Length: 176
Ligand SMILES: [Cu+2]
Image 1 (cartoon, helix red, strand yellow):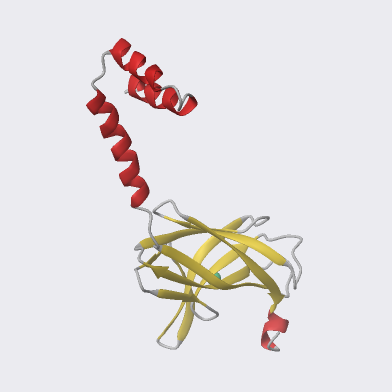
Image 2 (cartoon, helix red, strand yellow; image 1 turned 60 degrees about the horizontal axis):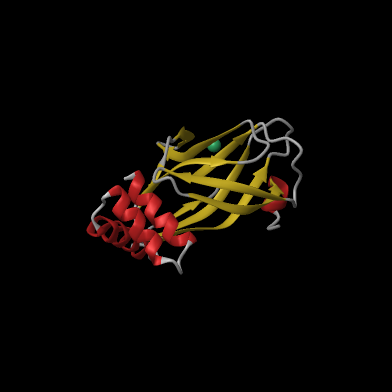
């Protein structure tokens, strides 16, 4: 396999000297068929790229008016053609971020910790007050009306970054 890779590299470096390729193929005694099969495989994997995507929008981080209390991140997550699972949200400067879901049951509202939020193709997950959110602990030196770049991580290895506008609860209540 290493020998086949060497041939491709030589071909890239000396595209005008095809006899180099021939000499090395002969030297290592590799059939030309192996070489063409390798090239064909790499072409096919390129063609598998398509328009599947995850989109995150309307990201905001609501800060607690009380210093030391956690903040919460809200956003809209849409999937086009991808079934995956949101596993982590990262916020620079935060000690810890947890995925939460606020649930009302029998007149009691509580926050459940969720390890992950699955999303299917065509689905939109809305992270909003009173529902799904990312709870941000130990976020220091962030004030209202700043931009914080959050990173969303998915179990398929994909990551998304989004700029979230920060606001205080007071601002949010006033429609700001
Ligand atoms: Cu929470």
